[in-house]
Length: 477
Ligand code: NAI
Image (cartoon, helix red, strand yellow):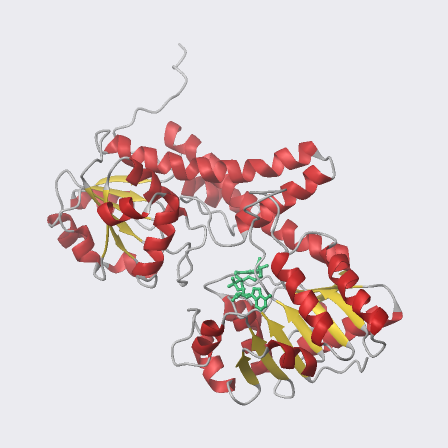
């Protein structure tokens, strides 16, 4: 093993592989980076004018580096053979079959990459798990690779864990200035050498004190724990939002006051219609599954609560919409603003919008959806898997103009926090709707007073509508 990385191959050209490798190529002109994927269409898109994913700042970097030291290829065996270091950045979704169904992460893609590396490596490689995996996944990868080593003595492998912490929507900034880079490896001479080689790559642009090295299992577990803590903060504040709605407290004021405590901090304390995205739910479930496998049932229950609150919050919001529209939404047009799981991404995986729309469709509401980035086809696929294709045909229309979506609607429901939603002419929108017109703010984008003064019946997560009687103690005399 040389210890110096000149050629990197990344298997998996998705939301992690694409942006991460673009950043490495951008910051390390001395390294040739090739991103491969079994999805040849995706590779064609990475090589085209329209990239397969939207991420602010990504296109500029890809266009600058592509063809120089950044390549997208479908030739997986060749790229594996030529690399010094191979990132595994394939998807690890929740398993939808067999043992661990609905809980455990599906590691079949990771395993198939390991087998591919074993077959095509030809020489020594550093193999890096970038995908989020359960603790000890590196051991399974290593077993497959070491087995190949028995029959081919030219082979030598080190497996490192280097989980990715980027957040969609801010991925390029997160990659350029990471809070930390985490690298886990074996505590052997060869292991340390491999860790040092990857540290060297990141040191091109990340301060050394921000690069943390640990043992492999700590690194694997830290990623799951980081996502579990982040998701837990959202569920914590969302659980409080329900108390606020019932008492007259305002969740934004509570979050502000609580967040001032430096031990708590003010980030990730926004109440909302719940978290989405490809990672939080699957990673918390993966942690719960791990706890169950270790017979740590109390711990499993504790973390499962985070998911339960999230599902409950989505349902609660949909139920409130139905209740406030006089207990029937059948046949009513409801404008949905936002379908992506968060702003600045077109990603819809596990978006709360899917669930809220699904609940409204159970009640036969007619949905008029607008999102600045999500394509109509994608919305229809997601909603069909939540309900059925026929139901989607019957109840869903997709608009490219938010004003058209809101016209003749009984209510507007805000499900993604896109900045542009704050800039619309709501007086005009109100005038075009069926009255009384309601606005349900699932992302706390609006001020109640302003919207009420325009005429809207306004419902924001975590604060009581003015007509609701608050519970309280009777004054004692
Ligand atoms: P993705 O689904 O966007 O991309 C994965 C890609 O891997 C797909 O294009 C798929 O075709 C390809 N692939 C699967 N098996 C393959 C194989 N055997 N050979 C070649 N290509 C193969 O997934 P994403 O979002 O990039 O996530 C990848 C990993 O990173 C997951 O483990 C995820 O949990 C983790 N992660 C994701 C983050 C995110 O914001 N999306 C952030 C941090 C970690």
